[in-house]
Amino acid sequence: MPDLSVRIGGLTLANPVMPASGTFGPELGEVFDLDRLGALVTKSVTPEPRRGNPTPRVAETGQGLLNSIGIPGKGIEAWIAYDLPVWRRFAAPLVVSLSAPTASAFAEAARALTVEGVAAIEANISCPNLEADGRAFAAEPGPAAAAIAAMRGATRLPIWAKLSPNTGDAAAVARACEEAGADALVVANTILGLAIDLATLRPALGAGMGGYSGPGFKPIALRLVWQCAQAVRIPVIGCGGIATGQDAVEFLAAGATAVQVGTASFIQPAAMLQVIEGISAFCTARGFSRVSDLTGIALPSLQRIAAE
Ligand SMILES: Cc1cc2nc3c(=O)[nH]c(=O)nc-3n(C[C@H](O)[C@H](O)[C@H](O)COP(=O)(O)O)c2cc1C
Image (tube, rainbow, N blue to C red; front, side, top):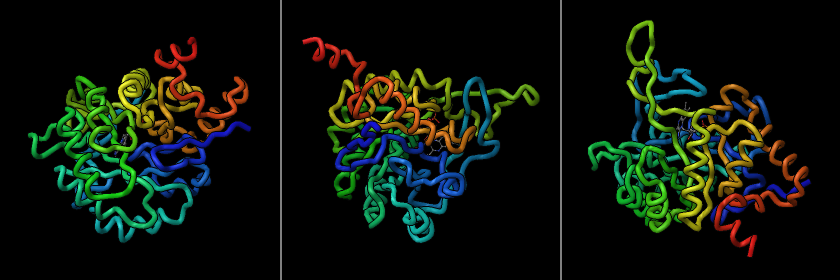
């Protein structure tokens, strides 16, 4: 049995597989034992209550899913009072995804989340920055770093910066987040897309554009992991179109230390268990005694070291 444990900036996870934010809730505990996961990641929590975007909020489209949910929720105070106690029943480390409209709101919310039972905060910096005309924090290095630095000053918890594919230079954003104090990167959130409903000849989603996820997004997410892993020293958590152990191994080889599974869980609720088993079977078949030895094995820099 290979050693599946991984280290993500101060945290040790029993295995490298966890859910992607917004695609998972504690109710999946009725389908399988959630403590078999490396970590639990919540849907993004926001400082204030939000109604979310107009419906329809999801549409199936070529090899994936388009969504524009708009992060509906009850706000952080009610989340801590009502949702956190539910999550605390599980033993796997809890990572709370946080979304906020300004850098200082990110900091204030990070401070509020620094409570027992929260193992790390995942900063969803793909959300609009109200101080930059609503452009996403993660679109450019400066605003991304400002949000992470503000959080760094407000919490002792590990901070995972979740990057966006909707940027010209993901590696520069990755470096800026590392310099601002992020302990790990999650690569990546959904990529902007569009679907047209031929019955109405209007966008299929109520909000117009949406975020594309699932199998069709995988090569793009894999490329981003590859670029970011070569740009930083902190661990990278791969996310985008992962449905099987083989998909996960590709991300590990491209530089990820762990992976997140999102859209695949809508098709097969226990997909994450199959991913864990698939990684383990790959390690056994190929003689890797530790899954961590796979991280970055396909990167040019590691190939050079191996050849020296
Ligand atoms: C329905 C849905 C809701 C999502 N909600 C969130 C969210 O609240 N916060 C967040 O950071 N990402 C959210 N995401 C993005 C996922 O966490 C993930 O980054 C993306 O879907 C790519 O992974 P996948 O191809 O495995 O789904 C959501 C994705 C979907 C499909």
